[in-house]
Every structure is written in C-alpha cells, then in structure tokens.
Length: 233
Image (cartoon, rainbow, N blue to C red):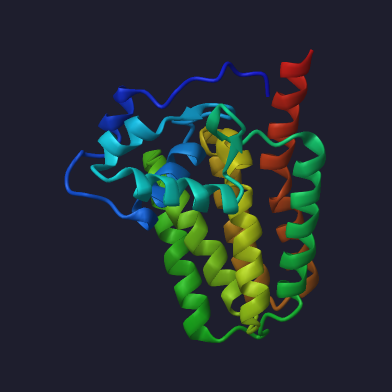
C-alpha cells in the first residue's frame, strides 16, 4: 500500500501508560493490537526511541520485540531505514489465506461430532462475550474475543501441531484484518457467522461448518485486496 511512512510518534505513548516497565511479550502484544485496531498502519515506521519511552524499557528489549514481530510477519526491517509495519502484496495475501483455508478445513474434519457439551458450552460463552463487545463497539475486546472463539473452536481438533499452525497463520493475517475489524457491518457479519458455526456443530453438520469456515475467511482478505488495488490506481 502506498502510505507515507511515518515514525511511531510520542503521541503513541498515550496508548499504554509509560509505567511500569514492559517485557518483550507485552510489547509484541501491544504492537500487534495497535496494528489490528488500525492505530499503526502498513508502512508506518516503528522508532526504537519512541518505543523505549512508551514501554519504559531498554533498547535491547525493544529490539527483541521487533525481532519477534518480524518473525511472526507483522513488521519488516528495511535496510538502512529501520522497522516498519508490514504491507502485504496481493500474492502474499492470497498465499496466506490459501494456507488458512487448508489448515482450518483440516481441523474441521477432525472436530468431534456430536460435540461434547463442555466444549459447546465454552464456545457459546466466548461467542456471547464477543457478541457483547460487538454491540458495545469495543474493538479491543472484539479482537481478543474473536481470537478466543477461533482458538476454542479449533483446539477441539485434537492435533496440537495443526492447532498451533492455524494460530500461526491467523496471527500473520492480523496485519491484513485491520480494515474489517474497524467496520461495523463486517463485525456484525462475523458475529452472525460465529453463531451459524455453533448451529452447524449442534446439528452435527460438518459439511455446512466447513463451508461457513471457508466463507468466514473471505471478507477481511477481499477488503484488504480492494484497498490495496485502490492505492495502486
């Protein structure tokens, strides 16, 4: 996307209080949230000094966090320029979402149907929390409850390696999903699709659940590609 690169300014210190000191995992989680919620944009620069001030930590801690963010695909280092929020070109977006579809459908094929009541109850409770966050337009809670819903869903596949890889590729997509998560209609659609997934599980309809999961991936991918195309015109 052709956004002008901007440094992480001192105004970003308002996002998190400057005290107490934050560790590497705290910084990674905060920057990840900023990207998903649109506080940081593709190609926006992450300045080490500003991050040190914001999180109250030493340079080596910030550098470790930036390394981890780069490893999971949310940022990228550009030689002689520094660290930037990653902007995915269309071909990478297509590849990431193709992998997500393969992995998630593989997990659906392994989900226990009929569903154990304990798992179904947990899924419904998480869905309720997500739904309330959507109604309140609490985007931070929406983000975290959406993650919780999908992790609760796919954890039941019983394959820890498959589950971990699903989470890995979902995390890579966080830099793509920022457009959809700030759109009220998209949030309502995602909430409704979660309910339909629960209904399909209750009905023991694996084929319908597979199709719902496949369609659930499309809105954020398509919105990102539309925006990317618009910036290239």
